[in-house]
Image (cartoon, rainbow, N blue to C red; front, side, top):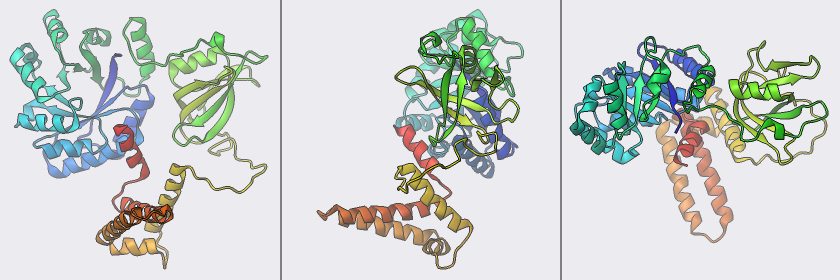
Length: 419
């Protein structure tokens, strides 16, 4: 298993918009996971923090650790319902160990991490046995002095360890060396390129998460100019953004930096997409076709891909035959966007606006009625009726989603976690 770099953000007294922006920068900078925390006991502050984490998990794909004040099982449930993958609990603030046990039994023993103020507890075998019995996934140790005695103790643990450190006096390679150390949580790499750090760690034979091509460039089939075409696609929507070319140096730089880098045929030089406009393309996946002569790049596109300001370079329509776009997510998003537009811009005579005006109770009543209609229709041998009833239910469900400030990305992400 590779060692992880896990930046942390203290969200106390921070504006959510700033935290979200920082989280996105950490992800595109090469972070493996992210740790955000606010251990305030104030209920209003906690709710605001949970709302901010929900937004963070919408904007980034890497797993999120959420550190918050936990007093009861419901606190853990609320924390995980933000979309976070792990809950970080300060052991010094924990009043009831059974909360951890109940949470690990409900959500799995790979979700709860204990943050220890006094890492000397790890020398106590009875303590380690207790937390293992509670279903704790890992421990977080803060600001350690990595003596031989402590290193031996960490290595002897049967539970993973995350070390939180400012890296002002400790070397990251030394901290990652113990076998049981899962990763380093730090704020040292704010506004820094973690891909370079990982390449340095890799050179020291430390397994880290970097881009590595499964096929050597020498095996690619190049054109007469020694180049390979690259079709660039937005990773979430599948929209084709542009076509460019790479030589071996451009391919290598793309792998090393995580930013799409191409070879300009007109200028005979390398160029990193976005280096002048800021519209970078961050690598999500690179795929080679069956003939090994074309690369498909799935990317996170910042801003428009085209120099004209269009989202895609393919905006000039040549010929078109009318057809129905039946891609499920496209259809769901289009219908949902109409519903959102009705909520923001009411239209007289709109049934959707009627539901919003009547409020949550009316919307819930209609969802219940439509669910019942599905059950009745399902007993009928003719599936046509069932098709209509399911469509009615999905529409009313989307109105409910809009009323409760959810969208399809929330639902899809939750389903993806369950997958």
